[in-house]
Length: 116
Length: 112
Image (cartoon, rainbow over all chains, first blue to last red; front, side):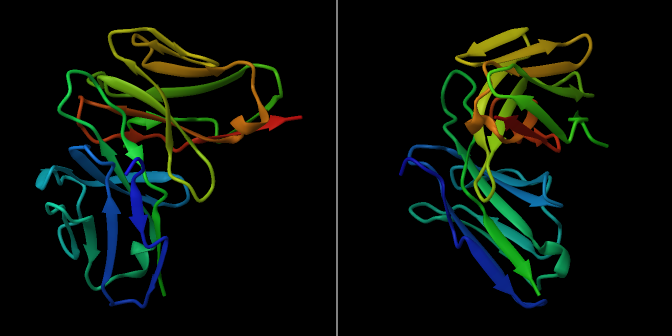
């Protein structure tokens, strides 16, 4: 598609439960990025993929968080044993890559994760 | 340590006048600088970018200026319109397919 599609828009989980978020990048885009927005305006980078390969995972918490981008499937971000501090809006972005010049990242509308 | 700083949390500008949003950065290795605009309950929308080898880039009503010696960039919007009311994020990246490092945003209010 022409937009980054994130599902669900809102996800509510009890503390300790698992949460799984999905992202369909723009068709033809090679790079996928996940960001976490906490405290209203602070964006934190989590992980990026080049096609199905992890490109940069320096922002991923060592425990509980995992992500995948498999061929012909939406990318996913999974949080095991959720904690209250995981409550945030999670944004996915994609960029074209594989071109000569710089290309911007295009963002989805995010998934609001609420941990109760 | 915050590498991209937007020191003004909010800014109010009269419709039709110029809006100037400012941003400072600390890391001289940044290669690209970006501005994104965000409405509530939506994702950031890319506005304009500038490479570190340039000092100005213009796109319609939007112009970004880069002062590398001062590690400062600014976004000029002229003339300001009601639809420009949003949160503006300054951001930077080290190279072409790298993660984006965001500032904390400036909320722009365009007054009638």
